[in-house]
Length: 412
Ligand code: DSN
Image 1 (cartoon, helix red, strand yellow):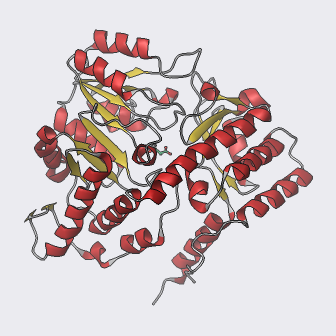
Image 2: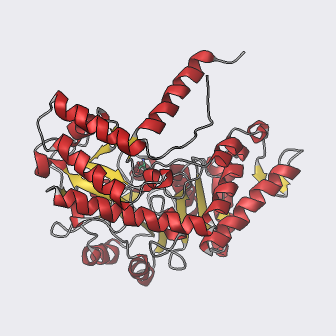
Image 3: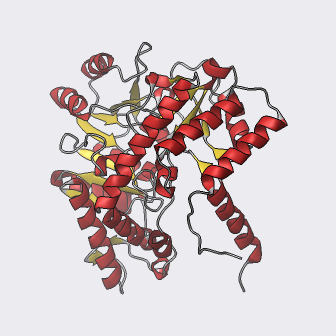
């Protein structure tokens, strides 16, 4: 019997995804083939090990799927080796640390407060608990990565590993320079390109290859695949990485997700994907211009990629938490986010993070994002009145009515 209770909630979520303007920079809308593969019979199969070297019988077809995913990923980024088994980005990162480091080893990663990620050494995260992480960050003047300070830290701390990559950073990251500084000082250089993986694939952000020794990414952000992670590396690290993922960190790989990853990499190899990547950046520039025109202060004065950090505290005197709620109420979904040197606690935060990937997938163009910026301003720059709320809801609906997604899907 079909579980009506669960499907009813899923149907409500489907409707939310249809009717909202989705601005969470790390989210996207996958293709129907990717959803179909994620829900396929491969969910039934155990396949501990790697293609051709499994601990279970009956793996001949999942071997085909995993090998296809590996080959496509290598082609997409021009890397030497790929492990497509990590269940998530955090698990990909933990496997890299497990492969390259001993507990207590020194690592240098970007501070979460400046746009980094929990798994890059936050004291409450396994990374910060297990290894001696130090942090680099952004300059107070430009709010962009302070490469002089980074260099000084690499030279004085002498980390075994340097981690680049961010989850709330709107400018280009100079992987080439960071790799040179790391390598000149005897450190390995790893890039977690989760946020920008799709932009690297489309040529809209400089590639971490061939500068990095190891690259990790999630597959569900700009890359627009199923939820999951992957690790790419030079051939000389392949054995250690494989061993660290299985049996080090994980047991059976999620073969249904790996099939969806293979399809995602296939999609990312098409000319249409390149157009989508270019459009993400064009849309972000349009949103940047619109928000600036409306008087918002943007962290680092704007964006080069898919996301913008808006200082709502400085721009309209409210917390990120309140801005998130006000936008939620007009069907615009974003997340509160700390900004560099934030005076607020992270739960309140002074900023919101907005991104263009999901609505670019739905078909929004520059003029739509110009209007999104105006609606955000109308809602956040004014008193909380029913009239303004109604006007914003009407203008959001006018935008979302122009595009459609998952129109033949029905859960109840
Ligand atoms: N939680 C993700 C994000 O929203 O950026 C990073 O893993």
